Length: 244
Image 1 (cartoon, rainbow, N blue to C red):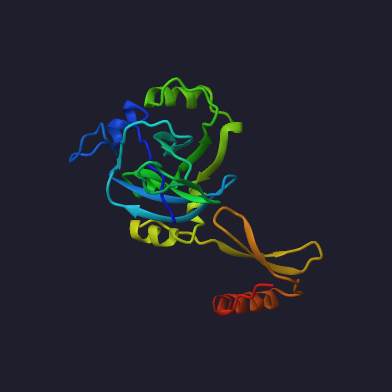
Image 2 (spheres, rainbow, N blue to C red):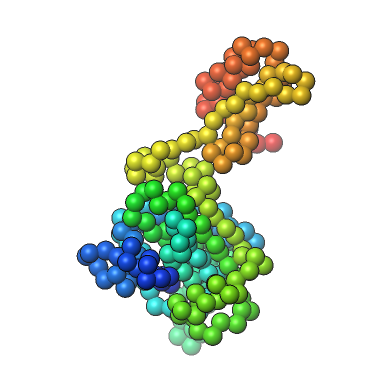
C-alpha cells in the first residue's frame, strides 16, 4: 500500500509570490502555474526517486501541521515551497469502536513532493532538500517560524537527502517530460579515448558526467573500437537480463 504524505506548502517571499501568482486563483494560496510531482521512496535511511510526472495546476498551500519530515524546494536559485510530511512508513488502519485506530509501520513508504514552475526552463535549476525535524525545537509550525529555522538552524547533519535537477534528468521518466515541455534532452554520450597503455577504449556517460559503462578491453586501432561500440549500440537494447 502506498500512501503519499500530506504536504504543507508555503510561499517563501513576496518576490516569489509576485512571480508565481496566477490570474485565476488567489496568489496567497497558489504557487506557479504547473508543477512536477516527484514520488520518493523512503526506507528510514535513504530516499530514491520512484517516478516523476507533470500536473497542470499550481501547488496549493495547505494548513500548517507539525510533521517530522521537511522538504524545502528551490527553483531558479530561489526558495519556492516548504512542505511538511508525516513519516510515510506509518499507515493508519480503520477506526474501531472502543479500540480507536490501529497503526502499522512498514519497511518503506512513499511521499510526493511538488516542484512549482511557470516556464519549462525553470526546471533546469531545482534543489530539493529533505530534513528530519525529529527532536528539533521549533516554536511554531507555521511558515515564518519554519523559514527562520531553515535559515538559522538547518545544518548538514539535519539533511536526510538532497535532489537536484541532474537527479531528475537521469531518471527514466524525464525524457517523456522533457519532450512534453519542449526541453532539450541530453541522454548522455559515448566517448572514445586512449588508456594508459595507448589503446582505444569507449565509455558511456550520463548527462551529469557519471560513467555507467565502458569497454572491457582496449583496441589497437580507432576502427576496431568504433566497430565494438557500434555493436553495443545496435544490440544492447535487445539483450536479456540475467540475475546471478
